[in-house]
Length: 228
Image (tube, rainbow, N blue to C red; front, side, top):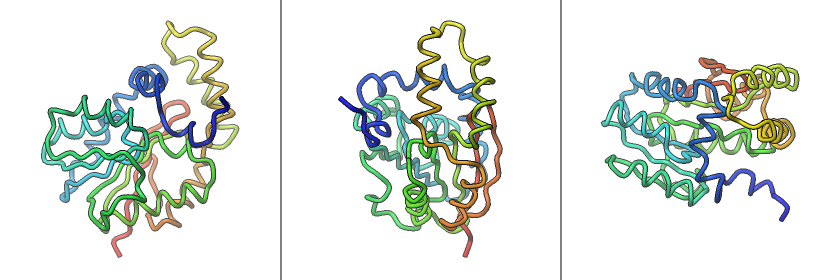
């Protein structure tokens, strides 16, 4: 069956159950990046987090185990990913996991922070990326931070950073898997250039973002909802 754009963005079946193994193998310094989320949010006084595209709940786990005071709402369109997250996070309190999308949430101007990790490069059209960012903006308190991580950069940046990524991959990966995955990254993901990311965030109402993390094709950014 032909894979549609919607299918690409929703992790089901093996893609869902193998997700945690995938991020460990294919995203160098993934655990370090996750540790930065809790540190960057440590000064937030309104400890309510909206985790958009929460997947299997990795950033939620690190944040809550660092500071149990956080109240978290995680939302993801994949029922299977949410089910994995529910099992992984079952020991945690003040946590709500929802199958769906941000636009369906009732919360308005509620959250003290938000995360959007490994999401934007699955969204094809800039207007849809902007819509998602605006939906997040509408659910944040003034001045609240937003942490973003994903594949950003122009065509040339992607090309040279893919060379770096290959040198950092685990040796046990087969050449067939590497070739297929690199082809998928190059042809079937919808990366955003760094300049366009800035423009999208500003149009949605956020401040100009700061890049705080970079490892091969992946980069992390932090911005804030304007205070007024």
